[in-house]
Amino acid sequence: MAAGTSNYWEDLRKQARQLENELDLKLVSFSKLCTSYSHSSVRDGRRDSSDTTPLLNGSNQDRMFETMAIEIEQLLARLTGVRDKMAEYTNSAGVPSLNAALMHTLQRHRDILQDYTHEFHKTKANFMAVRERENLMGSVRKDIESYKSGSGVNNRRTELFLKEHDHLRNSDRLIEETISIAMATKENMTSQRGMLKSIQSKMNTLANRFPAVNSLIQRINLRKRRDSLILGGVIGVCTILLLLYAFH
Image (cartoon, rainbow, N blue to C red; front, side, top):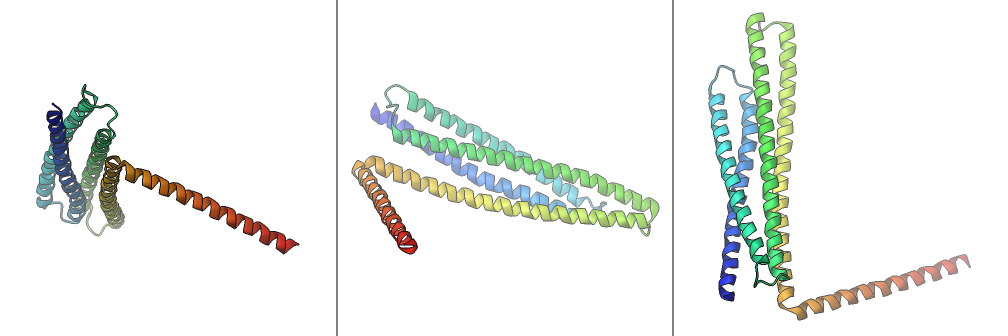
């Protein structure tokens, strides 16, 4: 019976790790798609409005976005289901409720699911904001082309309006590049945090398996704290003696 429950727990852990790996790959691709969409929209904004290629490219990227969003939502739902089964297992009869290793593993998977969910919603919101801004800028671009065809290219007011529009586009491009750099930095920090969590998990597992090692580490920490207090006291006494000697 114990072997069966242990195998069930290991199967749940394998499913959770597999889904987490798939989600990590999907989120990286999803982030790259959103970044490429913003960059391509900036490039397409410089082309002639009569060219239909940007519209087709934008339509393809929109379909890819919707497809990937649905896939990620399905993976998140599956991972949530596995996490719920793991929680039910830890609370079921016959499983020690105070098993630190099981609770630590469950909490780690909860944190990973929360991080992935937050990253997905944030990336999706950024994509929607870029798309709405591009729709607005496309409408402005059409108005500019219509005004140019009706008033003439050499119209001074049109030229000033076009220059202002170019300035806005350049500012938008700089903002998108800054966002891309920030997203890349966030991905690196997320990867490093995952490595640190893995190291911490292994250290906790080692400490739980070998209580003697854990006790030795605690004694070392106590001795280091005691030595720090003694050293601080000696430094304080020496400082007081030097001050007394200086003002004597």
